[in-house]
Each structure stands twice: as structure tokens, then as C-alpha cells.
Image (cartoon, rainbow, N blue to C red; front, side, top):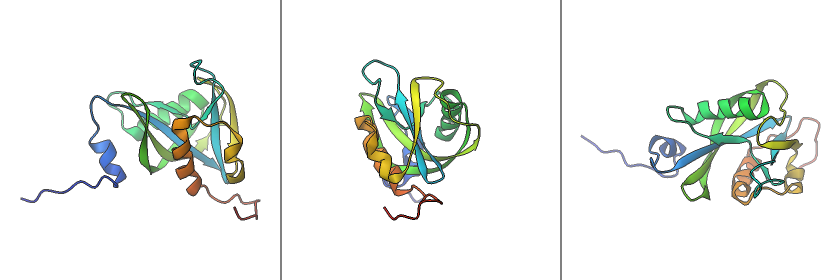
Length: 157
């Protein structure tokens, strides 16, 4: 009998062995035509006006990917397909961690339906043009590394 060592750098380890006392918040790095979708919070008051990657809490019995699909449907009115897990997890507040997946739109046009009052598609050069929530900044930096080059944008960033 051999015991397999866990590799903390392996993104699958993080959602296999979740601390039951930690609430996982999933977010989508939604890409389209070389741009990343940013959502401006409208609530709660302490977060209103700041920008984030859209998503929400993992519900009991859901996989993180199922939660992401549900949250993007509820918050933005779109159907999306989760892609790769972006390495890392980021503390949001005590007892909450953020985990991010890339996502591709399958259908629908994103609209701010819940918790947001504005959406913006940002190119790589525009990512610093919004006031990201502090907790989302490292996730956005990782998402930017995976941002496809825009087809009509011949410039190199």
C-alpha cells in the first residue's frame, strides 16, 4: 500500500480536500475576443463601486464548476462553460476563500442582474482602468496571464 503525497500546487487538491469550516467563493475569469469581463459591485455598501470577477458561494452538494455555471446564470443571465482552474486561492474575509476558473460564454449577453450595476469588457491594457476589490487583484493578475490576444488587436502588450 502506497500513500500518495498531496501537492499544494496541484489545483485539483484544493477542491478535493476543502476545510469544512471554509466557505468557497467561485469566480469566473470570463473571456471573449481577447477581453476579460469585470463586474462592478452594487452591494453590500462596503464593496459598492468596486470591481470583481463575477461569481458566488459554493452551495452544499455542488462542484465548484457547477456553482460557477449557476452563479454566472443568476448574476449575468448567461450560459458559460468552465475551463481551467487558475492556480491559487485568495482569502476574502475570515472563513471565506476565492477560487477562480476561466470561463467561456456559450450563450447570452452578460447583464448585471444581481449584486452588480455595471459590466465592462476589458482588454489587457485596460485591466488597471477599474478599481478592483483588493481580494480580486491577484486573481485578475493570474487571469491576465491567460487572456487571449484580441483578434483585431495587433499590438503586443
